Image (cartoon, rainbow, N blue to C red; front, top):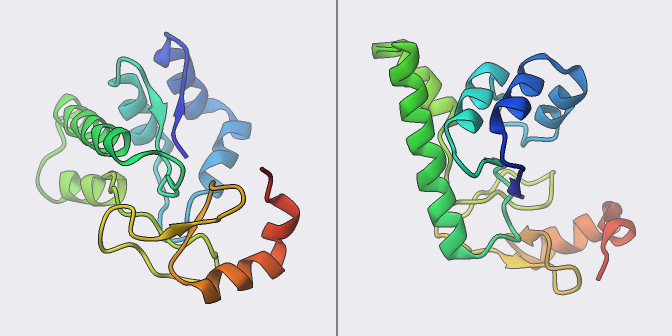
Amino acid sequence: SLFSGPDEPTELADAIRTDTKIHQFFDMLPKNRSFDPQVYAGCVERIPNYFLWRDDHWNVDKPELLARVKEWNQALVQYCDDEGLTSQERENVMVLHKASPLAPCGNSDCDLVETKVKEFQRCGRCRQISYCSRKCQASHWKGGHKKECII
């Protein structure tokens, strides 16, 4: 999900860089991503009405999602420019931290990612998570979503 914050993104960015409790946030990201807290914080600082980017943005509507992807990626380019990153180093940072409107399946045992924006179907009950198939939804339901699912 995307989380909007208070007026001072610098405070959060500093916490991201230094606070081990906030570093736990990065452990919640999908297993194929390993954000660098320095770069992540640098992006947050460069977004006037900041938000925290997560790839599992199932409950964000399409227009807002597309706007946030654009905003995050512009902040990432600005970070790279401000840090003087060039060539391979810049490319590595861009690939690792670039936001995408395509979400992963909500079943952590599945590696599928949408091929079209908002392609996967949301849980009919909580509408907070999306799945690539009924099979993945049923598996995740039995695996624990049933206990977490709230209306």
